[in-house]
Every structure is written in structure tokens, then in C-alpha cells.
Image (cartoon, rainbow, N blue to C red; front, side):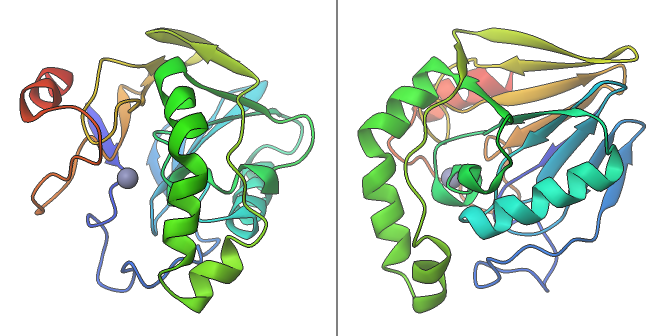
Length: 213
Ligand SMILES: [Zn+2]
């Protein structure tokens, strides 16, 4: 199994928390999965009929860039978007995606977005001028579709993405995406590397371990 973590601290030295603008270079992770490595890493899953993007980057400008990259990979595909959790660098760029993009996330995550999304965007915008500019037009967003524990997305040509919610870890609404037949897991901030796991109003250490199990 391949694990593509999206955590802030798992990437190379050229991308730190101060590099909020994604590049358009892509890395192939497995047969149907690509990634834009940055803050955070963005997953792009390409089937024969549809493409699923996992996470948006910080603000609409990053969302636009990701949508362009996804379109270049598969120009005629229908576009799905999902977010691993409601934090702004993962979810506040949704409005940069083109009209017709279908946004899906788990119910618990949507509730967190509704309750704390605006507060979190304000907090991030207050960190520095660049974040403020990137988030100027960002708003908490509402998914077109939500699910309880699992939603299986058929992308065509035998490619499936299982969107999964197992409980609270980094946040309450952490979502994972498991891509078949690649066996690639896009884990969001549930898998963090060389950092003390940060629980941001999410689960408990025990529930985090249960999610990993
Ligand atoms: Zn986070």
C-alpha cells in the first residue's frame, strides 16, 4: 500500500509553512494518482470519466491552479473535489474550482466547517500579509454531497476512490481517500511525519490511534 500524506510537515525543505502558493509540477504516486507536493500535498486521482482532487490549497488562487493541473491530466473528465479536513490550507480554495465541480465531504467535517470554518480562515489570514491576500475571497463552503462513514466514487475505467470517515483524529471530521486498484491511501493530516501529532479540537490520542488502525 502507498500512503500519500498531506500533512504540513512531511514535505521537503523547499516547502515550509511559509510557502503557501502551490507550484504546478506534478509527481506520479501510483497508476492513477498524482500529487502536487507543497503545503499541503494535493492528491489528484484520474479515472477514465472523472477526476477527483483531494484538498484545495490555501485560498481560491491555489484552487484555480490545482483545477488547471487536473484538467491538463484529463481534459474531458468530470471533476470531483473532496477535502481531508476543514482547515483553510486544505479546504478554503474550493471557490477556485470551476462551476460544475462536485464537492463531497463527510458530514462531521461539514459540521466543523459550518461551526468553525470562518473563525479558522480569520485566524490564518491574521498570520501574515500573504495569507491574508490568499484568503481575501475565501469563505466557509458547503459540500454538494455529504456522507456518514463511506462514499465510494466510481471514476471510470475500474478506478474507484473510497472516501472514508472513521472518527476524530487531527480534527473531528478527518477524511481519508483510498484509491483502488492502486491501493493508495491519501491520508490528510491523519498521518503526520516527525511531528508531535496535533489535535485541533479533534479526537483524542486513543481515537486517533483507532482511526489509524
Ligand atoms: Zn490541519
